[in-house]
Structure formats: structure tokens, C-alpha cells
Image (cartoon, rainbow, N blue to C red):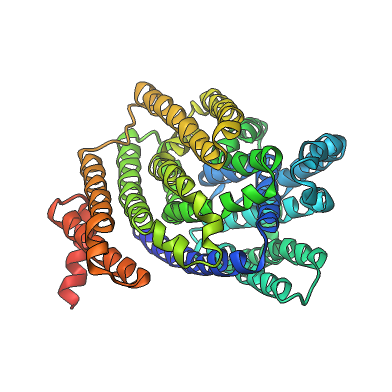
Length: 499
């Protein structure tokens, strides 16, 4: 676990640098210089590109992780990286053809409530291509246990480039057309940087992309293709939240989507740690699943789930107890305050997804991976159905509730199946302690805002900082005293002994 720990820490640092930049950009640049409709435009374009690129990848990113232990032979990889380039290219070609066929109906769906999107809809395929290969090169680096730089590119590089575009447009130095082009160009730059890094860690050896035809026997090709094509459907599980903005744009307009964008960014912070630990732990779990060491799989899965629950629930708590202060200090905050309900509901969904998504990885890497198609179909149908049902009735709150309800059904059935078939369980008594601790901290934050804050009469920012410090300190002490995690306790002891 040493490599996992080191890369996870580095990846988490990269993620939180990106979060800090994203926080500043989202709450003090976008809300000041862009209209709600323009924010909604960028969100719908990116979410559409991410969703389409996930489908165009033909499941190759998941198959790289699953089959890398099969292809690895000392320092040789027998062309798995070349395979990872060709499959997405084939998938993108298919997507481009489908896009051309259905472009008119798609435009019609947004023409009434989101006419601005029609002006830039032609850029979505280009943005899809860039987003596709950003992820492909990032995945190739992750199986080599080198995730830090790609995380910096995704979480920091793209945001900094977009910040420059926002400021240029905000000060009216460029037109909206050029701004949208620069916004899309940030993903092109990220793609090239990730490719450069992948070549660098392989000492610029282009032969890593050469497919070893002697190693790829007919049986191996058949197994890889079967799994890869199956994962084309399975990738929908990780992109269910994208349906929210796409449905909102079509049914409620880009302005309301802009409000949802700002609120959902706050909720997305909850999921940041999983992006690092999940990316670096998947290859280890895939290797354990391949050898059918189910006790080890359960141990790893419980460890990942517990720490993700601990971290994500603490982050959610600190966000929620300060939500009113957040909408008070940001520019035009009153226009976005309606998104508080999105932060709460979608934040809970992110906590659930962060702590339980490892179950999806376990099933997908096992010999029962084909069964996950049923779960994905159910999740997708539930997400679409709940969005259709709840958005007209509840607006942006309905979009968030749709995600939470869909995840609830999906994970309940998935976890039951894993225990039934593989005897793999993610649950432990420590997780009950974490949930109880989260409830107590939320109650404390509510009591502070209800009674202590009015009595103290402190400025909003100072009150929020003091409340955050107190709640975070109590959380650390409770985690240590309750012995929730031996790893965290050892880390705290080491930190305290160094003081």
C-alpha cells in the first residue's frame, strides 16, 4: 500500500490545489463576469462532451486497468497502450457519425429553452475528442502508478487556462465566440500535456504503442473485446450526474442550469478525494480480483470505503454548516442562493458515491462483470425517469434528488449481489461510527448558527472560519478517540510526535 499511499497523497494535493482554484473561479469570477446563461452554456457543453467521450471510449479505460496485469511482463507491456489508442479512435468515429445523424433532433430539444447552445453545438464533437484522450492518457499513466502529473493537468492546468479565458472575456477583451473556442482549447492543451508526460515516463519510447501480435492470441483478443464492448454501457454509471445539467438545459433553460452549476460545484468538492484514491487503488484491486483473493479484495474495498466515507462526510459537513455564509460573500450570491438545496441533496449523493463506488470496480474486474449491465441499465433508467419526473416539479432540487434516488437503488442492489456471489462486503462497524459522528457534527453546526452566532455577532467570514476550525478540531479528536481508522490514528500520532 506504500505506492498507493504516496500517489494518493500527491494526487489529493493536486486535486485540492485544483479545488482551491476552482473555488475562486466558480464563486468570484464566474458569478461576477458571466451571466447565468453563459455559465449554463459552458456546463452543458462540458457535460455533453464528458458523457459522449465516456461512451466513445468503448470501455477501453476500464479494460486498460483490468487487463494491464495480463499484459505486463517485467518492463514490457505487449502493446496495451497501442490498444488503448485505437479503440477510442474507433469509438469516436462511430460517435461522430451518430452525432451528424441526430444533430437536428438534439438541437431541436434545446432550441426553445437554450437557444444559445445552438450557436456552439458544432464544437461539442471537438471537445469530446479532447476530453476522450485526456482520460485515455491519464489512465495509461495511472496503471504505471504515475497519477500525480495527470491530476495536476486535469485539476489545475485546465482550470488555470479557463481562468485566463474567463478574465479575457470578463474584461471584454475577446468576443463570446473566441471565449468558447479558448474554453474548448483548454482540453486540447491538457490532452497534449498528458501525452507528453506518458512518453516522458517511458523515456519517449514510441514503441510502447506498438501492438504485440504474437502476444495477442485469439482467445486474449476475444476476452478483451468482450469486456471492452460491455464496458461501453457500464461507463454510464460514473456519469449519471451529467444527466442533470443536460435535462435542466433542455427543460428549464441555461440560466437555471447556471445556478445548478455553481451549487453542484460545491457538492462536487465532496468527491475530490475519491478521484485520487480510486484511481490509484483500482489497479491493486484488479490484481487481487484476477487472483480471486476475495478476502484481500474485501479488506481493500472496506479500507477504501471507510476512508472515503470519513473524508467525504467531513467535507460535506464543513460545507453545509457554512452554506449561508458562502452565498453571502460571493458576487451576486442572492441570485444563486436557491442552489443551497442542491448542495445538500447532491452532497449526500456524492458521499454515497465516494464511499460505495469501489463496489462497481470489484464487480467490473470479476468474472461476473457482465451482470453489471443489468445494474447499469437500472441506474440509467432510474436517473432518466427521476429527472423526467422531478425536474418539472422541483426544478434544480429535483435534478439533485434524481441523482440521490438513482444511486440509492443502484448501490442497494449492487452491494447485495456482491455479497451473494463473491462474499465481498464493504461494510464495517467503523462506518457506523463515522455516520454517527457526521450526524453529531451537523447538529453542532446547526446549533452554532441558530444560537451562538446571533449572540456573538461576529462578521460572517470570521464566524464561518471559527465554526469550521472548531468543528474540524472536534472531528479529528473524535476520530482519534473512537479509533475509527488505525491508519489515520497512526498518522495523527506521527504528526503529534513530530511537534
